[in-house]
Length: 171
Image (cartoon, rainbow, N blue to C red; front, side):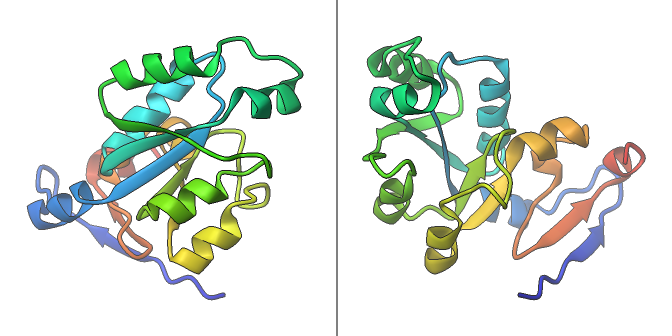
């Protein structure tokens, strides 16, 4: 498939409030075991919250046991902690018996699906569902951590990238 990237340079200090308003109406699902919840998870949630309303799809204890061989923090405790975080609108359980969160993506149909640092386009089994439902996949932790820029500086509408002088100098 062909991806067209449009780069828009915005004068320093200017932000397109119309685009910000559009982005704030986006719904974003991020998923994971989050066991234990750590600073990387919190930063990913904060990055997602800069783009819109965040629902955390939390994998089950059974999924964790299959992936890691143990459960450090039970589902109810992880869910409770996540619900206390600023930026989290909802925490949703998922039928992850197939090893994916596809069931939640079909059910919630968000605008964006955010992945953390251990996921790439090559190892995201939910990619087919996202393509089918026209859900944009965004690698939130890579955007915020590796490039040293805030996700709010990247308003990714239909593969557009907005570069400001403050973050352009860092790349």
